[in-house]
Length: 276
Ligand code: ACO
Image (cartoon, rainbow, N blue to C red; front, side, top):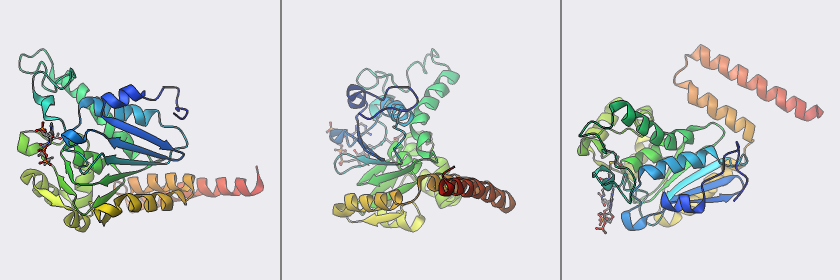
């Protein structure tokens, strides 16, 4: 495995396997595969803490992260066994200790914060993250796709925010991108009906940048990755950072941010030209 950045060792093959993940590193491209097709790539807390570990230890030369599911499903979301008192394969149950009060509200929120780390890093400006979605992306699976910058869907993709139907709220950082993309009213409708949004509708709503035939998904992802890699990395990072703050800025603030970022770019380019 390539050299990890920031001193921490990357997850071992055994840790990845226990988290139902595969990680492939090919120079600037990291491919993360949710690998549990016999359970429709259902995920557990360990999947997300390991995703966070992957994010913390990505080699510095990685620019693109592609997330996909093994087989014909992106992910059926959280392993429903995580809500049973016994949990999944010895992994702590989400509800452990809640009924008898031995787990406090604050402890539970800390636990969820740790799970959210697996989703938050996908917004890093120095990366472009892509969800390649075949079949179902349900609950946490939909939120994982929403955490990525780009969603490329096969035409059999179905997105579903199932949590409210199960008595839960979506808590894995998916509500903000959903509202940012489709608006609060459509987000209410999608979440509170827990209906499945098909690929074509997802495209119309802006939830997919691209929809292609199932057999074309892999090639389409490769084409987008190649196009992204053709741009200057520093400019791409600065541009993503600018775009991410645009919605929260006034026009004047955004114009100032553009000036500041461009001054840094031009200075770097000028130094490159003069070799200083
Ligand atoms: N957790 C645990 N096991 C699951 C999950 C899940 N989320 N999803 C599927 N599986 C298992 C099934 O129990 C089944 O196991 P079995 O072979 O031992 O019976 C196997 O995966 C295959 O599932 P099927 O239902 O037979 O597959 P099908 O293709 O017909 O349906 C679908 C796929 C639509 C994804 C369906 O399995 C489903 O609705 N799963 C539950 C989705 C869900 O409610 N997720 C939680 C959302 S909330 C959140 O993520 C926070």
